Structures are given as structure tokens and as C-alpha cells.
Image 1: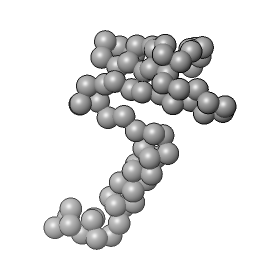
Image 2 (image 1 turned 180 degrees about the horizontal axis):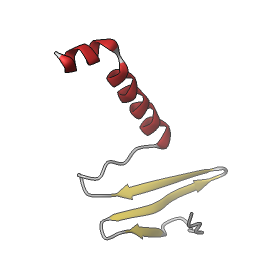
Image 3 (image 1 turned 90 degrees about the vertical axis):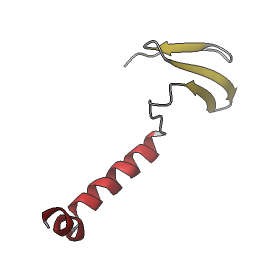
Image 4 (image 1 turned 120 degrees about the vertical axis):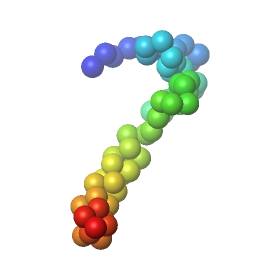
Length: 70
């Protein structure tokens, strides 16, 4: 894991097309802005995990398996 120190208004670049900007720092909270092409999905980790689990549950459900088989 790369760990960086950034101040408000500073940014970092990932690859050629993704820019992460520190928008605000307030106490224990940091607001960041992410500029990425439309084809790059950007999720908060907890949302990403919830969607992934929902997808896994849907695929494993008996109704979906019957639909796939038949």
C-alpha cells in the first residue's frame, strides 16, 4: 500500500485518467474528489461489498439457477 500525505487542494494521479483531490479536511474526516472516465466505476468500499454480495446471493438462489438451466 502506498501511503501519502496531501494537503487541501493537493491531488494524486492514478494511471493516466484518474485524479484524486483532497477537497476538505475537518477533524477526523477528509473529503476527496475523484475525476475518472465514465467507463471507470468508482464506489465507496462498503457499497461495492454490498453490491458484490447481492450479486453472489442472486446467482446462488434456486430461482436463478432454474432460470439459467432452463
